[in-house]
Length: 370
Image (cartoon, rainbow, N blue to C red; front, top):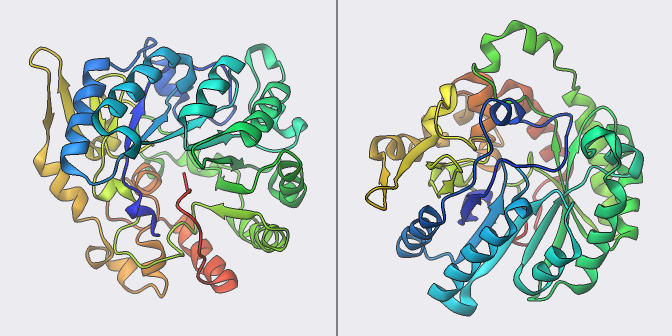
């Protein structure tokens, strides 16, 4: 199903993180703000709103820090959601995998989908995603992944989400084989993208010139890896193809929009906007605010209207594209961050999407994309 069909409420639980990833897209935002944690009453109000207005009963735990660093809050939110809809509830988490066995045991029983951010073989993982003071993270994450693949219940899916950098671009087949040994059948990768800072990338010449990632080379290496993974029964996706299994005028759930609750008390439409206050050029993706005094969420209806208008028929460059229904303008958050426009096209990826589609065509996959 197209990515836009994945409706869920996301909880950005905490800004606290126990890893020091070299390419973190919100590191400046976390540096500029004290550690913050999502308000439980806000989370409960968000659940009430979501269940009242959407048919989906899917909840998700995410950053901007590591969600398991707020483990007890995560359990309280899950329990509240369960009290509302019972066994209809499905639970997803995107985690760095660096947590205790106690957390692992809770996930065995309560999670339906676990995505572990994991960049490949130990040397790559330990370089890209170390603990503080450059301590290696791969040993604990390997063990947790193996435990999850063996013991996750509720017909669960365990997958890994990989950031592709120059360090692992040419090692994707090696990486697939490594994950296969850990019991992983589902892999999604994201080509490296620009950090969210105070201005869109297009307004900062230095950032454009210093960004070192060859998208053409990624396409070439990805297609080879995709075909290899398919030959051994592993699904290897990328965010460039997550609408290749359907037709859609909208790229993703940010265009519906569905709520992502931030630790500073806002409603965001997108994983790229993890703080609602001082969101700068990403402000159009902030469409609500928690009123703690009155215990209500105040929505910005005009911004919702604009987000819902972000579709192929309103994007001149996309209307002329032969794969527009398989892309629908690409990732809204990345595009806004790089171009400064909700309706702009993203030249960094447009050609890449077309090339990949010409190589692999329509893709059918389960309801498991991150």
